[in-house]
Length: 343
Image 1 (cartoon, helix red, strand yellow):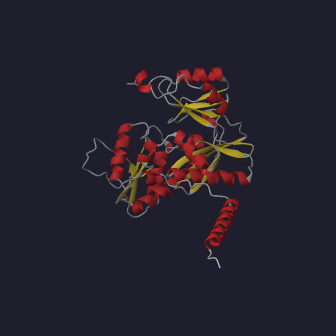
Image 2 (image 1 turned 90 degrees about the horizontal axis):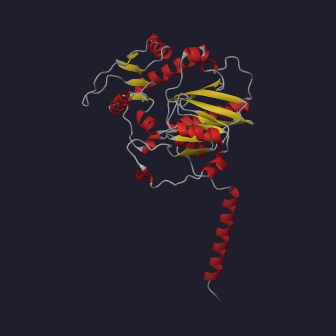
Image 3 (image 1 turned 30 degrees about the horizontal axis):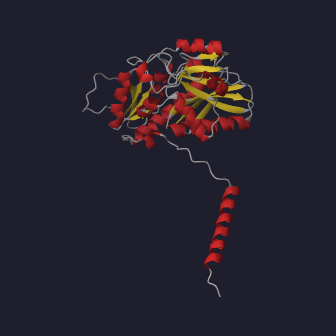
């Protein structure tokens, strides 16, 4: 019997529904249940073929347990090694390389020295910092947020320099990003499952938390939705995430990727609504069952294996290729003239 385990914390609706949905399928040789673990013995492999991880980002013990399970052949949704290494600033850099629109973003030094460090630890740091260059690049209307945060924790909406520095003062030891605000007309949060399936959910981050998923959306341009879908897939395939949400803010018809480091995305019935809840339960169940059938699978613990799609270098234009070919032909002809035997 291959077991699919669900590792979770305070959430109630999704974990139970996922376990019930998988078991209701009556797939031969597969059973789902909540993960149960105590002290983990190094020499003992976990009993699960697949674990759906919903909480290890908050609990280091669970993250260590999942890495141990992964190296012993358990398939973890999502890869705990890459999740541990990932951060939002890298995500934005990668998105830009992939050709996905992202707002201008800078990473800021810590306001307060991290614990255990002093001024002497910061001798490579520019001082005083060139704040003017930050505002010239991003502007004075933006968002400040942690480089590895989530759940809208420690996020500040900035309208001017005074608000910027007030927010920066409150960041203390956190490493923060400052990102240009997008004056959006439409906003989407997209579930992406298995790097293949996408559900686009109209969303409004300006509303109260329980009202952000728009249940009665207007009609949207089909070309816009297609680009949102393609960009969401492109990002998740590049980052190697099998379960994620990707957020886009749309300004003047351009979808800007705002947030796409959500490997344990919101899946609560009461926030996403019944239709999206039913969709995510079914798709994650399909994914977990498919991976359980192929388990055990041992990870290729190399950097290149963590990133699913390496950005290709920019292609040279046809005109430049033609110019080079023409130049090469001329050079060959000239060489032939110079080396031709004289009469």
